[in-house]
Image (tube, one colour):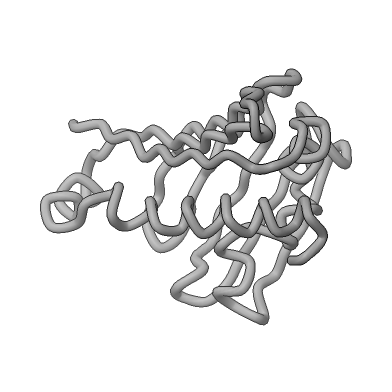
Length: 153
């Protein structure tokens, strides 16, 4: 079994109080998530509270979008923890963390995903670097998040 971490951060020129709600509510992810446009016919469902701990989002889409669910497991002013579970194309559970740290020019938002490669995923990981596979999507998502905060998304 091997582990991986994918992490990207960006300084968004806004206070955390304006950025945080866009991450804490999965209903807001359609404004900035890099995967929301992968499948125009993607099916989405929401359960639990609108935001915060217990909020749940599930999706089912084409081959590129796959299928899975996310649930917010922790939400405090400087950090949001999410349990991400993929069911297709490969099964995996990955913890995700967003942190929000004040900077002189705004807020540094850091998006981190951890995981373990086992079974078929471990074999796949011999040929694919998870950081290269997902890192660009994180960068695109953070750029879209900055646009969504400014209302230009």
